[in-house]
Length: 54
Image 1 (cartoon, helix red, strand yellow):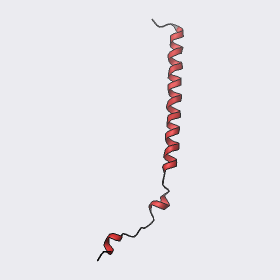
Image 2 (cartoon, rainbow, N blue to C red):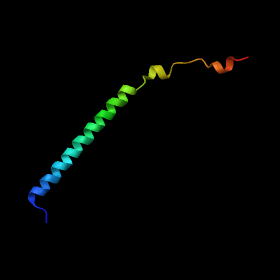
Image 3 (tube, helix red, strand yellow):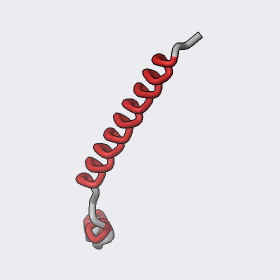
Image 4 (cartoon, rainbow, N blue to C red):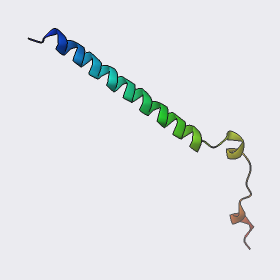
């Protein structure tokens, strides 16, 4: 039978895990934003040189 102190320890552990998950989520979002290519650069027309041979 769990004691009252054990329940708070589980709750505290879950709180720590939730905080770690949120911190990891924030790091991933920051990294994704740093790697993001602006849409202006992805839609710019680039000449295709393959068709200019011969």
